[in-house]
Length: 321
Image (cartoon, rainbow, N blue to C red):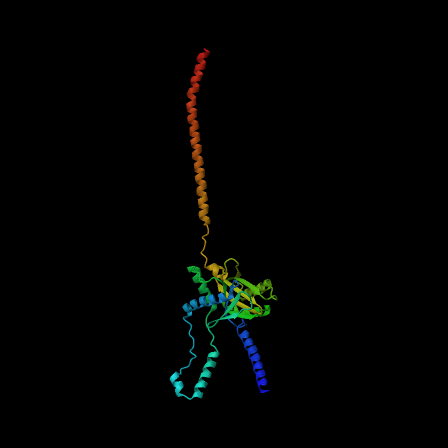
């Protein structure tokens, strides 16, 4: 009976531990309200996208903020000290160190489940995600170096709130003040997208946010062609991710692949018109020269025909006589 009871106890403990572990893992690895980070979209291959994202972010974060410093959880005790101490004390120390290392310190970049397919969320710590992403895109736009194959867009997330219109407007009232509240002002556009969320209507959300920006300062004006600022609103399930960015149009809606492409030179309209006018003038000049030559040739023919006609006339007169 004791063996059976022990077996049952192990099973129940295993089931409980497994379920508890899964619940904790799921809760700590999902995008939640209150987080800051970077939304990264990709084309099907999320695993490769995550690896590329870590490489890219760490490369530029090292430049801006310096290499990441991790705390040493190994403790200061050496093997010799452990040998000299009592076995029980050494075991307690080891357990304490394991617990300390088990409660892992947060890295500056952590990949979380965003709640949408082909979208990953990189949680950031102790850095400005909007500044970092702008720096990355600026460098890629200048150098045209291809440093990614599957990453599509990189959107900074500097604020999150509940994905309901009232909650969004309430949150944005304070969030947007540094950019749009008097005396600050600027031209802007709103880039809104919702994933796995059907309770928000795009037009209504944009209208509500535009009304809010207008209340913060009437001098704020909408510009859909080349705005100074872009308010990014990305809704995923019940979480709304928000940021205000610069150069959204210049950096192709923060699309990494498009930014890395070589710029194709556009034809100069002024030069094209000048070339056209020059061609027209040349054609006109050639036509005038041709007409002059034809007129000159005609005059020469008339001069040559004149005396001959006179001779023939004189001959006719003689014959007449």
